[in-house]
Amino acid sequence: MKTTDLTRGKETRVLTQLALPIMGSSLLQFTYNLVDMLLVGRLGSDAVASIGSSSFFIGLGYSINSLVVMGTAIKVAHSLGEKEYIKVKKYINAGNGITLITAIIYGLILVFGGKLLIDFLKLENPIVEKDAYYYLAINGPIFLFNFFNLLYARVLSSHGNNRLAFKINSVGLVSNIILDPLFIYTFKLGVAGAAYATLIAQITMFILFRIYTGNILKYDRKLGIEKEKIKEIIKLGIPTSFQRILFTIINIFLARIIAIYGTEAIAAQKIGFQVESISFMVIGGLNGAIAAFTGQNFGAKKYDRVVSGYNSALKIGMSYSGIMTLIFLAFNVHLIRLFVQDPLTITMASSYLIVLAFSQVFSTMEVITNGLFTGIGKPHIPSIISVVFTSLRLPFALFLTIPFGVNGIWMSISLSSMLKGIVAYLVYKIRIRKEFA
Image 1 (tube, rainbow, N blue to C red):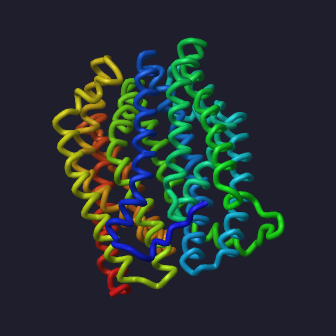
Image 2: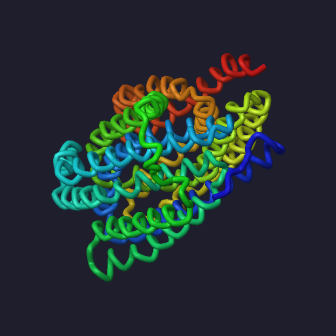
């Protein structure tokens, strides 16, 4: 498997080469989400609300898994920059071990405790609750493969080899797109059919990762698992994981507030978020690129290169997010109508996009700056920022819903994102830039 030296070459070119495959994967993911929402949307707002409700707990699983994914990726990138290839393999061994345990435990929680999780949201709609639990329970075994696939993709990114991950993700997503209508409509499985299609796609991706990455991602029995490596991975991964877990928990409580306004509001938030993910295609790619780029160059002690790479990524990201802001403001209703025709859901979802449009540039500042902090092995900095300001969403929502109704919830999300972006950039300017000067 090819490993790319990210400590050489023009920063913009290297970042572009790193980011494009991630963006391509994100584009495919968006295409799948679009098709999935179109298919599920035809089943009605209740079906969309079912997936939207269960997605909070699915997101919680990803948040927990980020502990091992983030910690392993950082240590692998640093070790590659130091040319310590035995250490690279030891960190991958430790990452594999933690991932297996995490996937089994969380999968069992979803299967046997999923109904209690859905009941917590107080949806007051038996059909939505039933379908949401079925969708959530099927995601139990999905996580066994998905957790490994996410780890493998991030480790490949640390090696500077995003193209292979892109190709494998492409196969998985295309498989999902083909299988979705088959399971949802032909087999008449409805919402559960979408989950079964995802399960088959994730298994396919897992097999392809194992086949086409040689021995780089496989567990090496000769080296075993060192407790010290596990501790290092967990220590680095905890801040990011805690941040994402808290973010998801806050969203779960926000969901309870949203549910007060009916299943249409839950569906609106789900659809609005899917449309907003258009922004994440490029920004998420830049985040992964700057993290890998920074990781190797930090390990090689090329600090000037870290700063110039960050500035390049920020310029690209903010230009793109500015364009997306205009699109969300001008074409929000047209975008929402692709998914549903219910007038109330359309109104709520279009309001979501209008309000969130104003925070796109600030979210870009946060995400790209987080990539830099992750690359230098200081994920606790963005985690602290995120924990503080994401926590404000609940009091903001409770206060703003009094005069603005459900739009107050959208405002609380947008306002907190603005604050996170501003503070993240200020911390970079004050602390990190001085260290690298």
